[in-house]
Length: 454
Image (cartoon, rainbow, N blue to C red):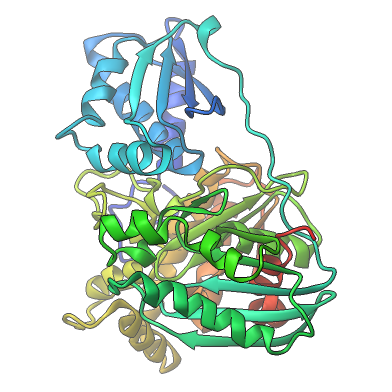
């Protein structure tokens, strides 16, 4: 590792670990080829293949770690519930145990399998010929600007909403709310309805509504979202899962589309830049991500990179939800800032993460070297993470935003990330982009408003 994170020197970049493993396999005459298919119940399939070391006791541990970490990435990047493996049958029972009941990745299995795709994760041995072909159609959403539209974005601390006429924003506002621990479904549903009504008051009519929100949304249905963590499971199923269908009915059935906020972030960036192959990463309450492919389309992927491993060290920082080590949320979010603040010497006690971020930003403005080291560390780790993401995405432009990246701290993050890319990965031609002020103010809401075709 040529660039060492100043506050986190034990960081082990996933991209370097993976490449070292693949190089070791490629250099041997007795290496094997592993082919993996990640399949959903509806037949949507994703493929991944790699050379791996021979099937020996000596190499079993490193091969299992390599494949398991990549699988964890694929589960949260693309999503699926059925894992078929060709070329390494000895890994199947080991992976099934890791992702099974009482296994280390039980959370991922329950969340991805049961909560999102409606069935437990399963693992099977297959021949290469039995593996399904890659099949994942692009989603034709966005870039519709005509008519009178409302766009909204639901975050952990505020609701953003804008009214738009033929692509021009005529009204926008942010309303503070606190959704995380609200148990009443009506708090959430009526909160969104309130924002929509306030925006509609500035339009002669409403032709379409589009929204973005943290979480997993499939065909406008809420599958999983931390915003609703305070709602009981019964109330979630009864009211929240179909809340946007209920809201659509209130608005007389007009076109109404809701997708993950990361996808809308990437779409907003793509529209503003007039570029494709855009990965958007927002460092805020969590790490949100979205992707617009080289054809300018949104893919039917999860892109939940907060849960994707970027650090392969043993005993690394733990994700509070999954209990896994080295996931992106512990580096590229308010949680990541709080973790590094302790290492930098700040004593914030039980102060909420958003307030800790404000304190670090204030210290940065005052020239506190401890705060600078926090941002330098985030930037170095992010540079390696970008290279890791590039192993799974075609990226020409990487859009960076979120409250963690505001102010001088964001400039430091980008500079350190670019240093890593130039030093370690000169073959990558990825442009790091910060949205302009117009895009920051209105881009997310405009892109959300453009989701639905009239």
